[in-house]
Each structure stands twice: as structure tokens, then as C-alpha cells.
Image (cartoon, rainbow, N blue to C red; front, side, top):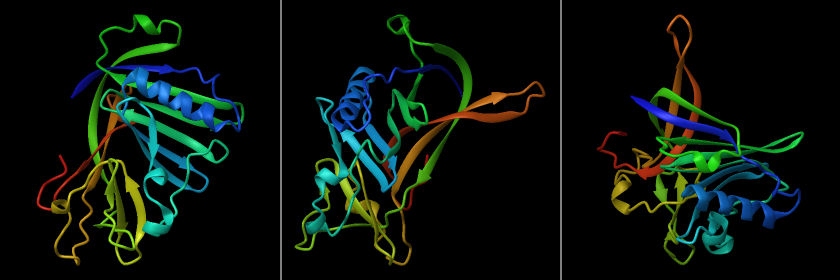
Length: 226
């Protein structure tokens, strides 16, 4: 398959060190401008999932699930511990990452018709082949609170995995029908769709030179991952 992609650096001057409000404002601004849906952040203390409401206000998993009620300690999105953050959706992905010189960011978008409004930033328009991969996320069962509070709320589902009970909260609803009735099978229904872009060297040998996140989706145990 073939796509035309737009690849560019984005300015990060508005992000101030040790200012959480500035970080969140920058993330929400980018999500609104580029109409993106999800956040996946990696920090020193763990992985943070998030999503945007209809007004592009960021909601993170730790804000949805009370640690005492659901017996879980979900990390918060904090600029002091953040290493990298992906803001993504069907339209594209923004990657924000920490360097010794400060914050850097780039955007990938597919099938753009008009880049005139983005003439102030460095940009490349490339015609490339691509392939898609569904990565399986851990989570074999939906968690409940200690008083049987529902583990689906505010667009998130709290999952645990296997006998160890490792927990995380993904920013989609995962209905009961997606989980296996046979607890021995340990079916993991949540998929993260990743798009890989392919380049070819002078000898025609293909390589993946760029990848981005696209979306999350649940898959039943009797269905394939496509």
C-alpha cells in the first residue's frame, strides 16, 4: 500500500521546564489543531494513557480511577518525569521527546491536501509504501473496584493481566464480550494499531524508516487482528 505523508518538526518553545500547566496546554493545543484523539506517554515512573474530550481537554487514566477504590497506582503526567509522549489518531501522530538541549517534537500526517498553513515549519512531503501491525496489549480481564465498582468509566477500561494482576487503563471501552469466558486462555483483546513507513535502498531492499501510532481497538478471541 502507498501513502503520501507529511513529516515536520514542531516548535516547543511554549513548554517550560517544571511547568505542568504549560506541558498540558501544549498537548491540548496540538490535539485540537491536528484533531488527534489519544495520548501515550512514557515517564520514569510508568506508562500514562490519555484521551481528549469533545473540547480537546486532556483526561488521563489516573484522573479516572481512584487508587483506593480500584487498588491501583497509575502514574500522573508530570513534566519532571516525562521522557516522551505520543499524541495520535487516524489523522496523524505527534511525538514529543526530551533531549539534553530541551524538548523536541515532530509530526507525521497522511494524505494531506493543503499544507499552505504550515509554511512556517520545516516540512517534507513523501510518497511512501506502508504496512500496518496490530500490537497486542496486555490485559486479560476487566477490573472492578473493591465494592464492585465498574472498571469502565469516562471512556477508559481498567485491565489486569493473568495471575499477577498487572494493571493499566486504556482509553477505550472494552465490552465483556471481548474477553474469554475460559480464563485458561488468557485472551488479550486490546490492539494498538501501528503504521510502519517503508523506504528502499539503491538495491531495492526495503526497510522501515518511520513508524507511528494510529488507534486502539478491541478484538474478540475468535476474530483475527486485521
